Length: 283
Length: 257
Image (cartoon, rainbow over all chains, first blue to last red; front, side, top):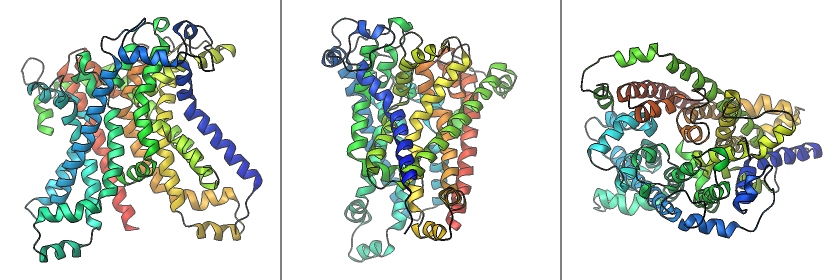
């Protein structure tokens, strides 16, 4: 139907290639950077092609042994901290918001609207805005430097509740009525009907929340005062803290690679869910 | 939440100071300067991020073969943490070893983010935009693909060129998406870029790249002025609520048509 223009197609590819180049280039440089020795990285301009040191650099940072390591805690510990926080944030968030959305959609109780808006307005606020009071609460509970302190404040969020609410609203009422006729309790309806229906939504949300949890920075910065509880994102930061010329860029880049690999894999492998989750969460 | 904030307006010594914290904010030149920095920064980030990704999505929508390759590669930055994005770009632009600064030097630009505040600002804008492009891109792409092909074809039959079709059909239909992204990007630039700023410039040189959220952190947890920091949080919170309300009134309207 529509005439396809050769020229325009070529232009499209060209523009997209430039776009891809821009998005991929820093990651490529990180890959290259992680494959050289410290001496090679200290010269200007730095080499543009891969060296042979990738494995050694990764080993050095992962186990925190060898020359040039500035952090006391090996990176594998940081990876562990990041993993635990990211997964517990994702899972916790999904459970809480499933239940609260269930309550809001299927039960009539006084002030339902008010509760909904309450959840909505308060929790829309990113943690960043409420750091001072949240920090006080966590500190009073003695949860500084613990996984609980790292995750609980971040689990509270309305975006997921809202998403599930929207989804539950699209589930036909007949289903709820039918299960009531069959004598199912509300929880049973939730478990056997709603949960299977919302599987894709849950998967999509998991991807988004995992990345969200993994990439948290400001909050761990306040809560983790001991290096033992540093997530990897913070570990990197402390490695570049020195003077410009003294930074061991090869090691920093190796750590950066380790830090961006897990979320990258999640995004790439679960691309379908990821896009669905992203586009749905915000609508 | 609100009550927590209120009780926090006690100073470090437990003393009710009322609105003094807010008043001193108002009189604080560095705070106003930080407001200005934030305004510049977030409009740059939102503007650049949206226009670049609109461009990319427009072309990606046209392509049939190999579209998924581009898509997979373009969404990569979303997975990168702001801090890591900051570190990656810092590496490219670092004065002594950076690749980009080397190239700039060849062109006769003395690049130093530690001394020149414009350079520092450019760096954080680039890093922040880079990270946000993939997000915007996905939304625009979804937007483009939800436009019925018949509309475009009808316009094509009527003799409208590509350019015309874009401006008279696709772009107007994308205004909801664009507006939504504008709000989201502003919120992003306000808050999530903390990592980028902290990893690259630390608000420097001087205070020239200290955006509001960085100032909240710095005043509260580095300078230990908790009361002032809480007051700043309240101001920020009002801004977010304003933006959210704006977004919601807008979504309601979208449902109607």
